[in-house]
Image (cartoon, rainbow, N blue to C red):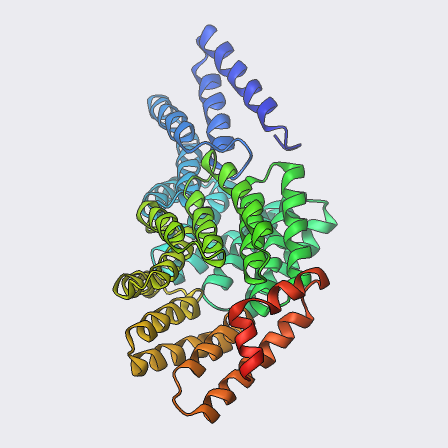
Length: 446
């Protein structure tokens, strides 16, 4: 398992379970079930939500029969971990809090740290910002005290994601940087897969494609070496989205399709994130009806509490509805995303959501509402230094102006951001980006 040979590990644990049952050793059977549940619950290459739940339920029943509270704490932690990446934050928190209570009661310090660490995403998705941060901080103190650098790295990876979603990109960058340092020092490829993925995501926001592509490809490569399916899928999807933003449609499709295939058998809700990106690729190809059908399929089926898949699905569904001139539906999809962001307290995706609202208002001819939405979008993009969104927002702001001189001023600002992104794009993709119709219009009319 530690070497990333997950299939071999599972075979060993299954053999252990069989031997235990043959010898009627219930304690050994319990240990075998827990080992299988742990490996099935994590974001490893053999993650299987259905099997993780099945094995965990069997283990929990056995642990209660044996009155083994330490085992119960570990099983409940496994369930919390499994639920946190399947769009079920309430179940994640419920299981995690039970695990934490048992660990505190019988003074299982290391188990307490694991449970605190992995309940954080459930708290985060439910809008319990302080609980999320406190649980990570408390776990971090234990990991430092135990000198467990591998789990300290995992803790920093979660903190980096929280910083990204809450809009504190400086803190996210600091956590990712420390994660790189620790993981490099102890040669932890799992940690490096997560660290480079986070850095790639931040660089994508900053409008620095060359560096973003390098980091995301590194994340995928590290993930493949150790079987970190979460890093592989997220890396491929961020890379796919970046390629689409640069106009390299076929490269985007290739990465999104690979990610979708992996997600179907592991982090199942992320297949809808992949389909959202594929829908956006159809938009760029001018196939609006097909794009809208795919985006709606993703939007209707994605778990509403998946903190990554749902925002991407909602954004794509709003964009495709706009493309077929169903502005009421486009507005509804964007409003549903904003409601989710309000409930969770996330700052990430707000620029996208308000830009989507503005485009729907523009389609309806409501320029006042469009301007208001764009001002909110601009404030968010500037706050996070998101050049990825800022140039689009400024370009859309120009479309709200009847005064041509003011429109040119907005386009000139947009052009400055476009030129920055182009200068930081790979030479072989720069032309694709500058030839995008929206980009070409900015450059021509500024």
